[in-house]
Amino acid sequence: MRKKEKTVKVCDVLEEMYPEAPCALKYKEPYELLIAVRLSAQCTDARVNIVTETLFVKYPTLESFAQADLSELEQDVKPCGFYKTKAKSIIEMAQRLIDVYDSRIPDNMDELLTLPGVGRKTANLILGDVYGQPAVVTDTHFIRITGRLGLTDNKEPEKVERDLRPLIPAERSSDFCHRIVQFGRDVCTARKPKCSECRLRELCRYYKKNSPK
Image (tube, rainbow, N blue to C red; front, side, top):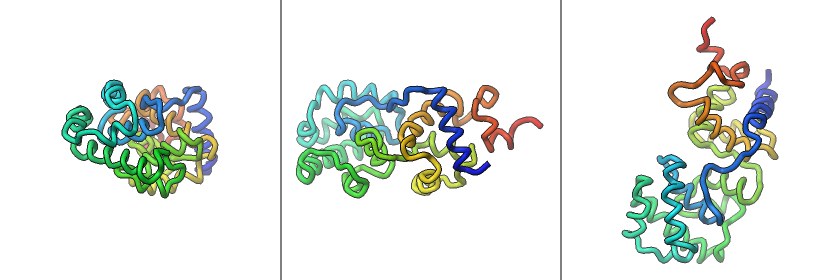
């Protein structure tokens, strides 16, 4: 089976399993999603959602983040880890959005990548969720599962994105990434994947290699 055909079948199964495909991070404004994704580096989405529930009340506007006291913001985001780096980049990102983009979130990859703390993973999430553009968000779940399925042999996020972008139907790509995250939490876990109850196992290179003969 060709990789593109397999990928479409995977899309179909995941859509049946997860008819809705919401972003795991909670936000109301696009800039809040930018901040939440920045906080999610090396941190669980669940913890980020706990932190941002009060953070977005304390700092209710983009301007309030731009004007935040660095040491105070560090303490506010400390539960997410790497708090000094994250707090600094959040303030600088807010300032650049105001000064350069008139508080508007850019709608293209090149401009998004000029924002402090924003890499391709974050930029793709914004393009997909905020602007409805084709997007491939290569988080740890995505890299692990697409590798196990045999859709890529790469581990580096940018190379995985390059491999998968031509395989996933463009109009389904953003939702596919959200479904992969949920599937990775429920079934295809990092340490002990639940292969016996996996609906993708007949398509999976990892299962075929590791299942009892």
